[in-house]
Length: 157
Length: 229
Image (cartoon, rainbow over all chains, first blue to last red):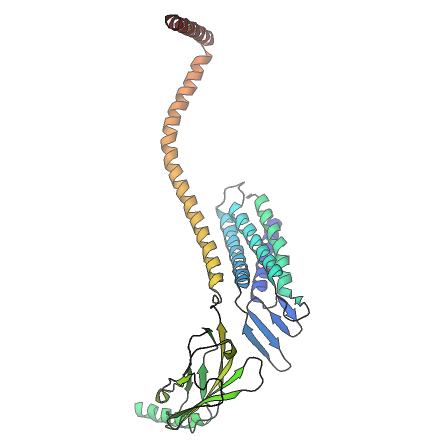
């Protein structure tokens, strides 16, 4: 039981870290020296780098909002899990935790889908996706699995 | 003590400016609609007092061009607008040099005015330091500012969450109240039902016989009514 608990908490923390890095790191699109989205467009030359704010398109603001919401909901579900761990009756299920975790996974999925569909090409050649974008897609199934685990999990002693 | 502090501060202020430079402040980016006026502000910080020889120089570099052209210069109490610049008839000096303000107003903007404006202020003998640039973007209609939609979506979702939680607890509270009144009547009904079922189970035969008699009497009554009609 303790192993399951530790495993579940580690998975949850991993999800949280993935979501935080994906939201905060500015590398959803990488094109040589240019790394862009979600917040800035940064150009690195040999001696320095120069950043300017990303143009405030509607879809980009939606992606920003959805990523921030997914981080918030993941934090809230961790908080609820720790609360329910001590207050739930024996045999009860962690429904609140599961709902918030599944909502977080839905938000990450929506953000990644919107970004994939609406992404403009920075240069003539289509640019590569950066590591933050990959982390967002990796975080989606992990949070979904974590949420489903919380639905199945029952509280014992 | 106080005089010692004052002396040290004066000495420090006397020494320090020779190593400090002037710092010019403009905005970072300005958005404007086509046909409107825009005020480009420029001010500076300098350790020295504002001298009467303070000077402001504005230059303009269009988007995509490599060189910048001088468009405005203020020195010795006189404002000069460059005759060959694209702004020579649209530029007005609205700054107050004695208050370290060297702002200009450009009227009747057009899409060709997109570019970077650089303000260079000098406060003799404090002439070191770098100029500062502000980027002008001219739009047909002003786009939604960065972060407005983000904040709206986050606020809406969190508000919905709070609403759902409030409604959930409200429903629990109300149902708890109703359950109290319902269970009283239900207990009554249930009690009667249980008692009734217990009673029925014992004299089952007599109940069935009573039902049969009742059904027969009802049929007779109906027949008599039909006969009457």
